[in-house]
Image (tube, rainbow over the protein chains, first blue to last red):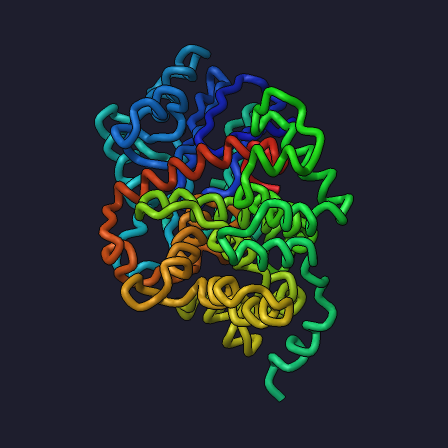
Length: 160
Length: 287
């Protein structure tokens, strides 16, 4: 198996059976994996922030940084490789946050809320998720099979 | 016997702090220090000199002419810039080993530290202050206590993790409860032993405290904040880094909105991308 790493503010789409897409260190960021079992096309996005209106020029250079530019790009790229929305399995991981009673450090929650909004608007349902809490997560997507795993520190890998 | 006693005794085994870096930092306490004095200190360390020249000639700086001497480098970078490079690479030796007790791989703590140090300079801009090499250095060294506590945190890994997961303790509180001392306190002690400037010792020792800009030095507040932002972004969070407690009302007191925080996150990422090649961070952001 060949690992293809998705960095922070990065995205990969693949139809290579031998590849595993992986993204490390999801804190408040969100890892969104999509997979079409018929087309055997998988995509993985690792975005950092909810809203591209923060900095449109950055969003243009690096659309995978934001939910509202990264998510459409992930789907569009995967459509181009044969993925169909109604067949796609959707997996969401991350959106953690630090211990903060004042609620200021809620990037994780806002990242998740934006994702829900975008997916809802586009009639896409989430099939499996592991979000919130104060855990650092790694997400794997096997392109040949569509199987996905999440790994947290000190724990075994868990299939989603 | 307190569980912390053997840990305090083990402080003797920790690597010494690089003397060139310490001397340069002390010189820089005087903002008017002549460049020639800095040169005098650095030039006798051939390893550091070579490294500095390599970095100056890397694509990061994009200088048009080849930088061939320390003197030339100092002219191009200025005193502050030179010392920042010096501490960044001086700290590499201290911070590069893997720390399994904290779930950190090789060089991951260094990457986290460089990200925090870089971010403090972005945060300073946000509060309309000039760049500050002492704050940069304090942020770079804030987790230095982990290099000593790693062994003990490793032995009690599950005990500490269970306290965090089940008792809603922060990683620091759990560490203190189990080991009798936490990495911030221990780092402060190490800093004192190394004779680091007192401002830097305070940034190390207090980086997890519930600091407030009306009561505490800005430096301590910014190091606290930059650490939180970096772990939240997943840069060197390790096993329990996200279980860090934010100082209540710190952002409110600074007059920041969540959007200000978002902008800092985004700027920090861009700056890290820029220096990623310099310090050799792989694209995944993990060592």
